Length: 463
Image (cartoon, rainbow, N blue to C red):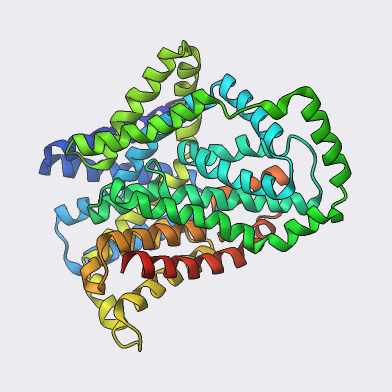
């Protein structure tokens, strides 16, 4: 088959899957569940040959393992289709959520943000914290696309090897912070749908935890940052000259682009208002807002050319680039759905009850450990998070749904910077021309401290 026709068929199946999911959610039709399950199987089988190396074998293993479990359980057709469509939510999110990032890329906003960044961030510590915060905010709207955007701002002027590593750390951890709170990420969609939670019920806790991550990051790398501030960096003199030149150019007076700030705030407010006003699942609300809000914003700014270009880029570039994630997420969902049929959820509390600590604390330790350790060996967090979120009732381990949701999101967030398979680590490795393990290694201490902070945060705030 010619590549053009194959790509068109792949896009057609993905769009059809998203449409079937939306229709099934609105009607709760049993027939549409079978259609959705069939499209999920078709998508995995169609996209699986596109995968390479360990990802292909991992996805194939999930399919084979899930099928074996369902056969052993004597599952009927409905159980097969339910398992296959377990993560159809996330595919639907991939189809619509990136549209929110189109206005963020308006040339006027990007240029104003660059001037603000160059004119306002002058010390190494401010550059580090500012880079992490900017990634945390931008990443929430344009996902991994935020990394090259922030990279070109942070590296607008040359840095020494030490500062380059620190800025890579900042972007990595900032993206992890975005995973914590963004309603447009797969993590939030999975957790809220599996635990029947609203985004607004989690937002105060995950925003607080994401900001704590910035302080933890500063504390972990404080010694390195102070070394630079004390003049131990070779580029300190050049940085000072650049700063003086920037001030003379008047960039010091540059302010954060007001239009971009309004758009980012309104994009969050719209979701919060729709969530309160409409009795629909969060994913459907995001799809609705993603179609209408960026379009209306670009129309109001006279930027329809940018919108059309962004939409075309999403269909022809962004969505095909997500094929690996779509295949892996659907296969992982099928495997977790098949595990759910085995009664896995009841065995975990029974196992943890034997430990000499309260059940809720033992389960929290277990969750953090299993997500972090599997991430270290390259397994995507979607796998353990899907299994835990869909297989274990919060009450059975003595925690509330909100506690469980923050625990899963926090564990996913802190595992991202240390995973050699994460998209951010691999993208930064390409940008900086460094081995991926070299970029992940400095984040081990950060992840360890954040794990302790997460457990303390949950104990104090949600127990």
